[in-house]
Amino acid sequence: MKKAIITVIGQDRVGIIAKVCTYLAETSVNVLDISQTIVSGYFNMMMIVDVACASVSYDTLGSELDAAGKEIGCIIKIQLEDIFDMMHRI
Image 1 (cartoon, rainbow, N blue to C red):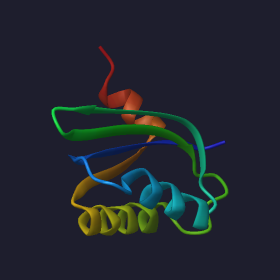
Image 2 (cartoon, rainbow, N blue to C red; image 1 turned 90 degrees about the vertical axis):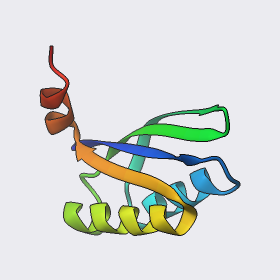
Image 3 (cartoon, rainbow, N blue to C red; image 1 turned 30 degrees about the vertical axis):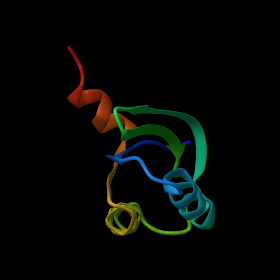
């Protein structure tokens, strides 16, 4: 298993979760955990995913998620779990 963290931030609108999850399914990325909230009209989602069996490279995932975010007016970022953990150590 090779875990990554995906974050999605933007103004709330219909279809954000569908767009992200459809792309992940099409690229064989498994969603392990998901949390989302809406605060004062702003959508925030964090996903833990397994990219070990992804049908595209990690770099391609990042660039295509970025492009998908632009289509729906959100910022979508992906980061490998190891790097995320190192950046957030106290």
